[in-house]
Length: 270
Ligand SMILES: Nc1ncnc2c1ncn2[C@@H]1O[C@H](COP(=O)(O)OP(=O)(O)OP(=O)(O)O)[C@@H](O)[C@H]1O
Ligand SMILES: [Mg+2]
Image (cartoon, rainbow, N blue to C red; front, side, top):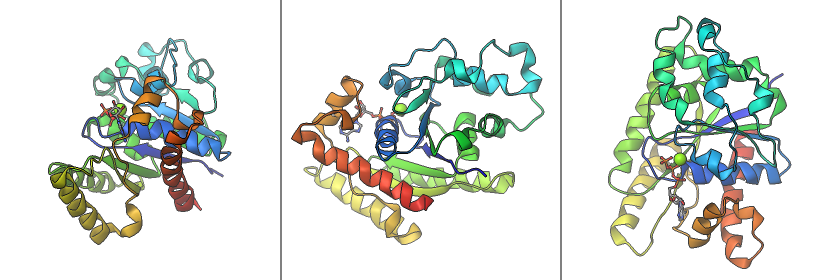
């Protein structure tokens, strides 16, 4: 029986905190005793850098290797050579991922299901309690693969007047995935308002509007407490450490906030 859950951090907008959140929430889950694998699906490889991982091959090569039809492109690498073990294990991303669409353009098997099948072929849901995926800022084929492979999604966003339209666009893509009729669409577990500056009146107004809209359409429990713009978080990222590696007082709030997201995931999964 599959017990593990795949959870993607998604927003087609750049710089909203997908990587920051996936990194720290993955560590929060691990701290709670869960077996966690992080997958970096972004050609930018930001999550990979945070994990200080630098393997020769990455998730792109593993996905290509998992498609029989792409045999001429297969590389001599195995999952065990690519996974970097740690408190949270990591499957690195890399710039090769930007060629993914083109690589799978002509295959006969469903292009949207490459990642899902890779996860199944390797029994990753048996080996891990949570597989946390960091997505690139697009709604292209890689992210469609992430959606098709995911059980749940978390949507970090920055409150501004564009984010509401962006969220609507994301839901319409979720509907499109449902309409394909080949997978069960992932559930939206949580929206996370991030990088909020409470001194800016317009931002607080925009945030209240978006929160109201989400609460109306999806319910109050689909939105997490706000993450403010926090200097200690920037410091931890610069040092490539999760907030849980710091023991001074200034990190306490951040640790609690990321734990809140982790608890929401556990609650959703119970
Ligand atoms: N709550 C926060 N407080 C302060 N800085 C933050 C916070 N969240 C994220 N940042 C900073 O904002 C920047 C963007 O964050 P991040 O890289 O996680 O976003 P992203 O959505 O993954 O971006 P991309 O779409 O480019 O992958 C980073 O420099 C990060 O350090
Ligand atoms: Mg990112």
